Length: 266
Image (cartoon, rainbow, N blue to C red; front, top):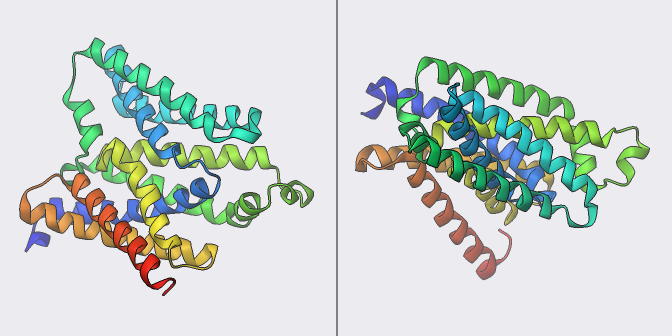
């Protein structure tokens, strides 16, 4: 049995935690039409890792700082281009890709960069485990505190200020949550894979759920199923967990979209 091994128990614990918090931040991002946000911050985390390795400080710290700066950059640009908010992610993404390429070349490549690309959830250490649990606690508590205001700002941004909601402060707080979540998740399941788990379970849930809360709960359930199935398959077939998880998620999304097209809402 795979649960006889400590590394698999840790993998399932960390995977389950990330499977809960990624859809939490993914749903508002998708509704704001910033679906590229996850991909943007994932590339920013790679740039931060490369910069950290090049300048001689902790790559994880570089990843966190880069993600926070990128998230704030997206928020700043989107606030200036209200009619074309999705352009903000493209601008920051292009910058992150350029910086990642340059600093990766300067470091000559590294195993640390490879781990951020493909993830190392089955080799997670005590520090990474504690970090994931701490970040998850912060995200869950903060999300609960801002849930009502975030819901209103997403669906009615015009009425939100009239009800005393400081949209700018709310967006900055949410951007910070997204940044720290992506930077930490990238270290465990892989940088490019993070954006997939933020978006794909939410899109699957949207095919059948009829409310914001229902979509949120269903996307978390689907995300957990994808992660658990991916870890099991990767263990038995000796494959990279992150890649398997994403392929299972994409397959499920394809089936969900075909089912909706064929039979409509269940």
